[in-house]
Image 1 (cartoon, rainbow, N blue to C red):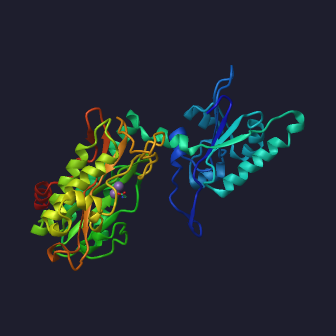
Image 2 (cartoon, rainbow, N blue to C red):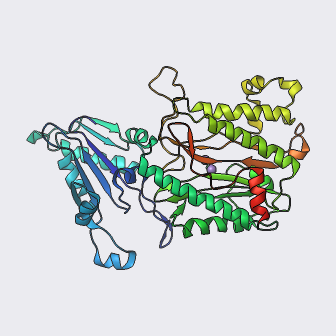
Image 3 (cartoon, rainbow, N blue to C red):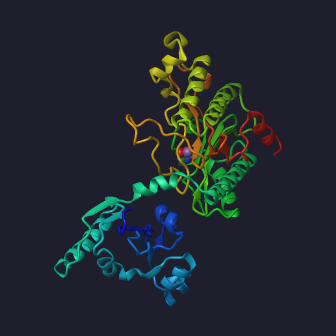
Length: 429
Ligand code: GLY
Ligand code: MN
Ligand code: MN
């Protein structure tokens, strides 16, 4: 931000679920990133330093409220929030509009989350109008508004040490939850019973929430990428695909494991499973600082395309070579998603995947401290040219990694993923 500019950022609203009941409250990730403050009804104002005037951070938050605190629990109130979180100033949220008219006087630019919420846009318009109304007393209103989130998106791409430690904790808890589900699995169980094992492990380990709705997909359900009903009964011989991660102190994990509910892979299941595992290993090996992000997906695609030809999922006589499979995107019949995404406060975290400053916007280069998932898969729906032994098998293997100086640092390694390790673990049940 230029000298004297002001940034304004509100946290997330509380959302009613029905009658008197709210959805569990989750603060806004950007707001939390800058403040660490988790109460609703809070707004951060940052004022960039100008000349001899130092930069300032100002919090607007709920006041102390003896009665509400009896019903809903502790609130910091401005004074304690200022001291505990290190803001330079703090005021009751009810003073926001009046104070903004003052804070925006003679300010060159206002940064805020433009066009992300109509109520905020209207509120900002009101502030600007109030400042312009003072023009006869010589006050200038900001002449520019600018999108704030784009700046924060890029800051969030690199995780510092404390963030990395929280992400490791989040992934370790989620890994243990996958192990717990594998141990609990028996043919005939319902998918939601396995989901319950995951949720139990998250919560008993101190994770506050699942990071997203868990996917527990048995048999053909595993070919539905965002399956979330989790209400089918598992059958002997099914694979179960579980995509589940937790949120620990606001940081997400996102892990997928696929395992046979009876503890033993069938031959076609194992063939496809080991193909996806080889693709994941190749993708993990492409997580190297200085190499393009897009190389991770390319590495997985190369292995998957080759395997699709070898296993007869794609007709070698028709396509001839891996190059043709890739050029014609023939693999998309069985692999239709990307190989990963940034991971952090949000499960699909912020930040560009391309270098927008370069001609042609090529894939950006990996840098130590970036956090991403690596998650190839294969999903075989029945079809006339598809070998029947592979029908309705869906497999994904997803790990969470941080780009280290020498390559990928896998955070989620506690959940087994080789055929042997999975079968050994399940045989011990
Ligand atoms: N669980 C969502 C994803 O894997 O991206
Ligand atoms: Mn996932
Ligand atoms: Mn993912």
